[in-house]
Image 1: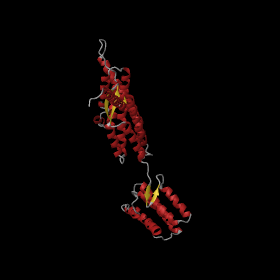
Image 2 (image 1 turned 180 degrees about the horizontal axis):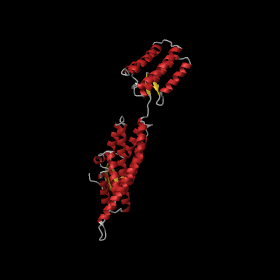
Image 3 (image 1 turned 30 degrees about the vertical axis):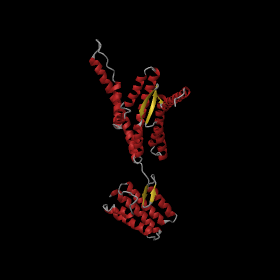
Image 4 (image 1 turned 90 degrees about the vertical axis):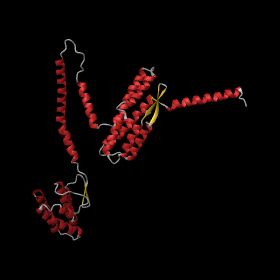
Amino acid sequence: MPMTPKAGTKSLTICFAVLVSLVCLSSISAATLADYRHRVSQAITLSQQLQATHGNEELSPPEQFVAANVARIRDLLPADETVLLDGQNVAVDNAWLHEALQNYEGASSKPAMRVEALARIVERLRALDERLDEMQRGTSANQTDKDADKGRLAEILRRPDYNRETAAEGSALERLWARFVRWIVSLLPKTGPITPGGSPFLSRLVQIIVVAACLGAIAFIVWKLAPRYLSGRRKKKQKREARIVLGERLEPDQTAADLLAQAESLARDGDLRGAIRKAYIALLCELGDRKIVSLAQHKTNRDYLHSVRERVHLYSSMRELTNSFELHWYGFQPPAENDWNEFRNGYQKALSLGSGS
């Protein structure tokens, strides 16, 4: 049946409407350069929030917080998307970010690897943000060359500081050294054409003086700050953790003197059995601080006694204290006042032998 002119006009109108709708949807699905850069900035902020929690030694980030931030970063920058640049669509590949986030999540049991992975993510996102800023300023200044703008964005995404293979290479120390070398080079005077009255020797001498002055300043700073830095590292390493000795938890700042004072208090209150146990643990704590024995949660009193058998005099004195401890604590034989006095005297004798043997 032949199509009437009216039906043909209606069909053409429908096809035109569908075509316009597809073009509009295609334009809507592509993000603008400004929107893409704004989402990159948001991803940097979220990554830095994760960095701040990892940098706090007293507070490790909860997994719910990590998962929420990582999911938000993935939503902000999909693995594949299109950026609308002056009416032209440019394909953007963010797959490197998703792979890096997956590696970051997979290192949950290795905090050091997590910190390193997160540092690489932040560094690369910052590099991309800087390049997009350059791109955006260049686009605002010149809106006529669309093909050049498109090629510029593609070039940005291929740069070494954003490229997946190149950016993953090199450790943080190598990157720091490269930045230091670039800084030194920037201090050198820029050499221009030699003028008729110029002196190459004088120019070279000035360069040597500038480099020597920079190296001298760096050496002075290192000389002044290195002892403070090393002392801070030593103090950090010497930070004591909570210990468990014979089933009793000792706080990080609790010393053998504190335990002995508690034993004296128990004895004055009439708890001689508890006083003997507390004093015996104080003895082990003091020997542990002196590196004579190694404290461990799984060790028994006999394990500690056997560990000092090479120190004959200390072993003999400590064996008497161990027997007294076992008799009155494990044997449930009520100690008398004289038993406590003998144990306290034996404690002092064992410490003197431990320092001299």
